Image (cartoon, rainbow, N blue to C red; front, side, top):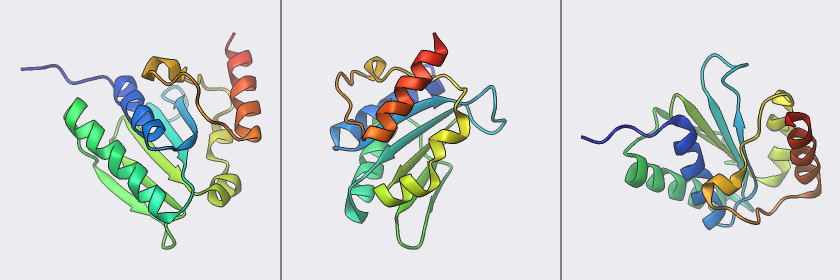
Amino acid sequence: MTERLSARQCALIAAKAADENKATDIMVLEVGELVDVTEYFVIATARNTPHVGAILEAMEDALRIEAKVKPISREETKDHTWELLDYGDFVIDVFQPEAREYYRLETLWNDVPIVDLAEAGIEHPEYSERIAQLVQKMEEAAQ
């Protein structure tokens, strides 16, 4: 019997699947010290409604195949500008650009460690200017 992968490993599998499906602004935040309900947030941006669904489906498939896990729940806004997969010890949020900019979910935890996406094999993540600056600040603060 194989051992269950850690929340971090699962979050990285999800990030890799998002990257492979052309998501941008991918971030994996280690929030366990500040949030009681989960250890990691995976946040990504999709171009439009069909892209949100495609990214979430790819992430869910990768996690089911590679980590043998299924989400506890799936939530979505009526217009599909933001969808969420809750796995308990990690949560995935995929936004369309306008919703990502409006909610700025990643700014709620400025003091948490950001996981280096290179751990997931993502060498050159695509970031908007705002997210690139935020990632840089968070990485500098962690040093």
